[in-house]
Length: 351
Ligand code: SAH
Image (tube, rainbow, N blue to C red):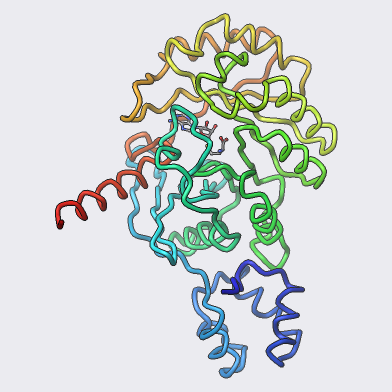
């Protein structure tokens, strides 16, 4: 099946020719899908009825169906669970900041990277998301809330660089003038560190922010938390980040989830600083969000503060990520996992 909502304008032009219609219709359809966020062909009132009918039959529009939403009483963070056309479910989060609304989207159904503290990877990878499915998480949230989304972070379930081509198409459409026209600088892509893909991304010369999930000061500790660290050494990952900065001029964000008694020691901060102090970077400290499947505990408030101070003394820029929506299945993949577990248990009950 052709996914019309993942097509570029020029692909849509070819499609119009193929359907025996006028190429200028391509821009109209594109504008309806990506600018006006139409959820059906019926809304596309300036298209001839016959064309709408043909498209409806042969090129169904991707529209995600909200099945659950949780709203944080603390800060208004909203966590959405969406159903895809094939019954799979994914999570997306809307966070409200003073500078605007930010949406965190998923890039895959599940994940195969296996990071030890992450709930999204427990069931493995089911499939990649299509560009249209990444886009529609933002489109539906903007439509449901009636509020403009100004920032997008690809930090939900999945490894975006493991779904590279679809990610790039997603970026192209999201940042296009006829689409939501979100600036590349307002888009962050987070990766666990797939070195060849970071190198490839650097070549694209985009102005997006790359966030690198580091979580450790050395290979030994990183390997305990992240299986991918057995494939690429920390030095290789850091070199790929240096290259990304050289080619794009964009400062790297390192994400560091602090796990009590694992990677939150002052020596860890010192070692980390030594390895990245030559880089144009910024460290985002995140007290790990404990998940019930693992016994990792959150670093204490004091340990997080000390870690920050230690890094700052070494001249590193540091922020502590504000915990958003901590009352609503905060950690990545928890809402989805709970939904699936519940669905499975209902199925078992019926047997
Ligand atoms: N696969 C990508 C993007 C998705 S995960 C990546 O690894 O970067 C987004 C971020 O959340 C990553 O830094 C990830 O390591 C972190 N993360 C996942 N589960 C977490 C948890 N339970 N507590 C804190 N951070 C977590």
